Amino acid sequence: MSNSSSISHFLLLALADTRQLQLLHFCLLLGISLAALLGNGLIISAVACGHHLHTPMFFFLLNLALSDLDSICTTVPKAMHNSLWDTRNISYTGCAAQLFLFLFFISAEINLLIIMCYDRYVSICKPLHYGTLLGSRACAHMAAAAWASAFLHALMHTANTFSLPLCHGNALGQFFCEIPQILKLSCSKSYLKESGLLVFSISLVFCCFVFIVFSYVQIFRAVLRIPSDQGRHKAFSTCLPHLAVLSLFISTSFFTYLKPLSMSSPSLDLALSVLYSVVPPSLNPLIYSLRNQELKAAVWRLMTGCFQKH
Image (tube, rainbow, N blue to C red):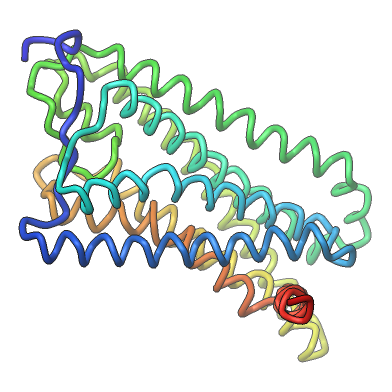
């Protein structure tokens, strides 16, 4: 294929060669999807219905659950379809739409995790200014900015990536459409512009990561000065889950986009993509609900209330 205008579809990476393994992968992906749907759905419902959870921390957690739910629904259903029907095809427009939506929801997740870090910092280090700095209007503006900037970021990268001429076939070494895999198909030197945009975006994320590390140093210093064990436990129970999710998400995505081509292999690329695109949306509800007593109690009341109605 000489250029992108002759490409009508892409070939995604097959997760398995044998029919038995394909069906096994379908069942695993179905289980992950249902777990993500149930967990994030419960968080969204519990926060929306629990009036005592209408606080900045849970408002941002609700937005995070929405981005998690949408991001996993962008990539996993197509992989399930391909495994079930033994196919690898995705249309050119379908690939562009999948890339845009994936970048949109993943970018929104990064933005929301950064905002949640700021929320924890103000709550613990500047508690007297919490109501002023994180009022309802400020929270709405921050959430809107997170989603709007994610939209612009996704639009910029998608438009730039799919404007590149593609000269190296149409087979992607990934189970969903991803920028590094599409760049491998581009003509020599034509990918430099998108690579520059990626470096710029990653540099911004790295600056945010430095801000997060600095914030958590201040947070842990403040937590260790709390006199009561109960107060320290409550502070840690809201900070440690956020830090664990953030570390997994940023470290795997950084490595995916910054690793040299010499280290690239189908198995490594697949493992890394699963770690930052599938695992966090599935585990976030479990991590946050297990460590946060208020959320755990709200989810339990929601579930028992539904059972009692039936």
